[in-house]
Image (cartoon, rainbow, N blue to C red):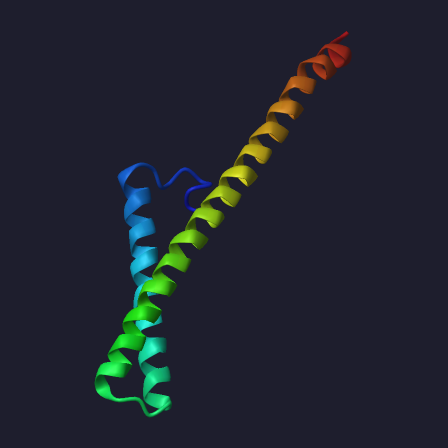
Length: 99
């Protein structure tokens, strides 16, 4: 939504994507760690599972950000095209009303 409104551009956009990916990695680490502990794994096994989960979920969040960003861009362009089409029809209607 922020990008669709034009609030995120350039460096801010990359920083937002990076934060999104890091958040996903942290969530993945916690999920992997807790699932390892719940299964009764040893300390190194829990850390290994948490690290793999962090990597997988971080990359998944990066992919999801790309899909989400593309969808927002397409929605913004559709709205711009809709407004442009309405504006192109407007002058003809104004001429008809004034004549």
